[in-house]
Length: 227
Image 1 (cartoon, rainbow, N blue to C red):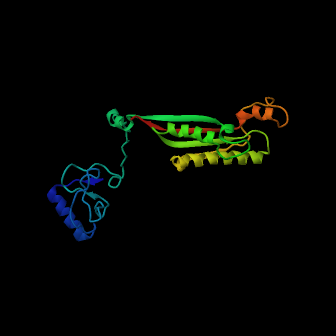
Image 2 (cartoon, helix red, strand yellow):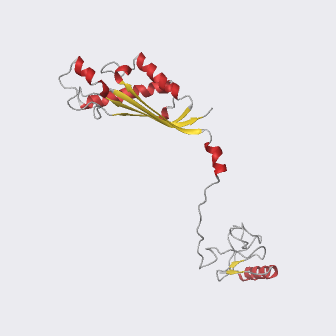
Image 3 (cartoon, rainbow, N blue to C red):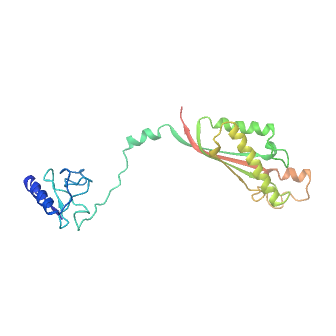
């Protein structure tokens, strides 16, 4: 509930309330922002109230709007979400396009068989990937390493992790933000060849057949900025 008084009545009401000790001492009678609508406030900025819990209108400006603090029957108005004008959004996205790069590299090109040190040919392949990033702001680069079935599962898992670790080290050395580069080793768990494709014991022929399983997949997501 809100008491609306004339200017003279407001001053008299506040003076009486102060004399009776019903409201805190006011350093000044002032109005607060329009959202709180011309209520008298104390030196702390709180709305001054009578001993009956009623809020005092300053007598200036319009009659106060209903508030939860001063109206026991207050019902908050529903807020309607409004989309910003298209003209305001356009400058934010002009010239900015989502970008993605996906690259699958033959591990035999990157590394010697059963090794995790980058070969010169592997460095050249990664240089090409870095060159593609010149006009892109990468948000995330994921490098995933895979191994073939020869060797134990634990060994292949470790080898795949070491290989993508070498890839990340090289990319960071070429100026790529290391915090954007994430690596994961999958070991032999995700082969491309199917069961029965490369049968037989370990031999040059079977190793060559399993080449698609030995790979490093690099995926980048970011934004391409027109220049």
